[in-house]
Length: 396
Ligand SMILES: *[C@@H]1O[C@H](CO)[C@@H](O)[C@H](O)[C@H]1NC(C)=O
Image (cartoon, rainbow, N blue to C red; front, side):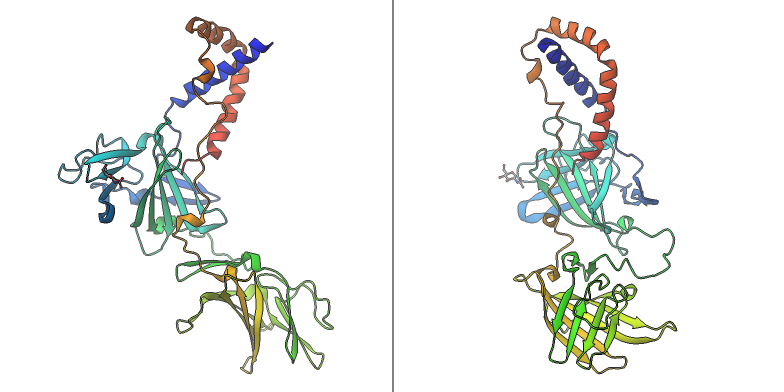
């Protein structure tokens, strides 16, 4: 019984080794179809040469292509960027004149969103080198920018296991264009994140009910959602407005309608860091009768507190709310450290050689012959399992 177990295990190991020698099954067309939209990265192929990125401070030169293998560089630029036409990137240490090769064109590309919670930040496209113990893959973070074709900001080598080269660039090809215009031009008002002036603000943790009392008024406020719990309010209605005011005379008024949400950067002359969110109330005829504005102000010391509410006697009247929160602190969407660190490729059944150590070659042959037939169906299911696994474990 125990022997059978080891034989089956051995077969699994051999099976996975055979599978590992196949070329990668990434995409070679440079297109990613996701949820009804097709990204086309093929305009980024450099058809006349390679992309070059120099880091003078550490005397490194990076030579790469996107969706295409590299081509030969003149010796005066890189003496060892070869064999080209096979690898998609080289890093060249100009001090030692030595090269490292990264990514293999024939393995194709895999795609995912840079920010899994926000399709509009951009796309990571990854190209692995064949699966050896020192596999060097290339990951390109393409940040959506309508105005750039391919503008490289930075290139890093990461000492992950296996290591990868990371290229950060801006490109219109990573922008998701909606196939059909949605009925309302406002983005999802429940989605409490925005990018303003190239800074990412994630206020999702600030989506909650705030109650606040000033000498004149009481407030019930729920950014990015409706006020549902109106306890303590004599005349508020649940589920119709994103904010309510109750005045000292006992009258209530809605402050804003959820579907009118607009994000704005703080004005240039405002020294505070943060972002604003506006709503207004409109009548059935489309007239604005009130407006409200949150100033979410960056304060690393607090999870979120309303510090001030002002009523402005404008036409229409306006309520301005200052809310200090650490979630209002801007994050750099280009800084790779705020995103989950790259997953390391690992597979429970492919750990090499050690299991075969105690068995002679003749026994291995016998085992493959006997168990191979017996376990064919078993292997078939393992193959399917591995296929779905390898889709999960993408190399960054
Ligand atoms: C380039 O090679 C030199 C000499 O081996 C080494 O000291 C340096 O760290 C290398 N540069 C990089 C960026 O790896």
